[in-house]
Length: 134
Ligand SMILES: [Zn+2]
Image (cartoon, rainbow, N blue to C red; front, side, top):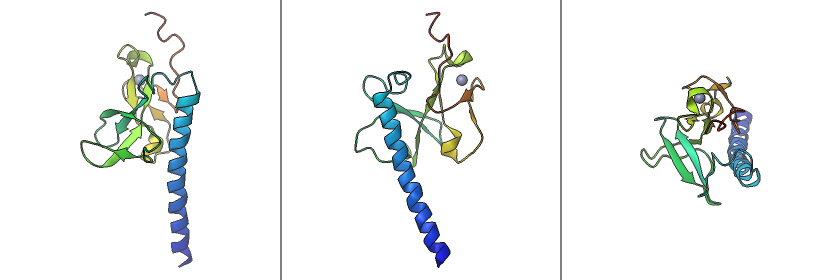
């Protein structure tokens, strides 16, 4: 009985945590100038990546957008997570690679880009020389 109660509390805390994550992500996009351009473009869309299919969906966020994961419009499953963009090595000239963070797969290991192998983190930085040869 006590254990059951704890599990319910844990579930509630996890649900609240997910909502907080959405709110923080939105605040980052709205209030940080640097780095937000490639994630949130002029139409306020954010690239989401499907944890099942790997497909990328640009989604416009509003105050009514539910918590992560969002529903994949193709499959109807709640599998869309905000993608981090990798612009390192060969990913840069290709316009960036959308990467699903290990955090969203419940994996503790650091996330590496599946294309170039570079370490990817939240608010993933671009290479220092990115765009200098355009
Ligand atoms: Zn990469």
